[in-house]
Image (cartoon, rainbow, N blue to C red; front, side):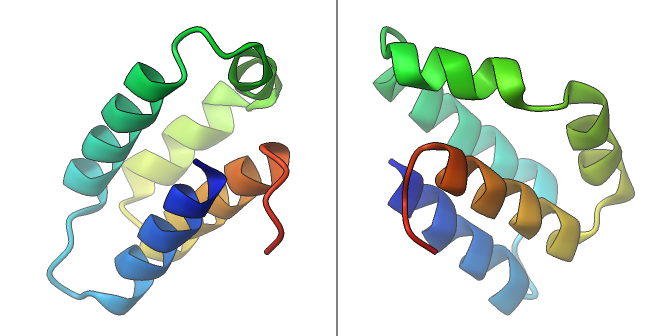
Amino acid sequence: VGAVYLKHAKELVESPSSSVESVSKKLVAAVESTLAGDTAWVEVRKNINADLRARWLSSNDKRWLSRYYVAIAAGLGVAQ
């Protein structure tokens, strides 16, 4: 699943037509449905700073959102 985050992080930066909000919503929905009962994911979620994430999303800055996804991937133990 961490690999999925890395893939989407790259797409956000490389695709000028991708919307930060739409990609984020799709990705979060997919990951949360996949990992609903995964204790590791629960721990990763606990460690994510919600205020910082909200700031990144509200800034509509693809580079910041990309870093957020990479950070989650790292939290899930995926090599960058």
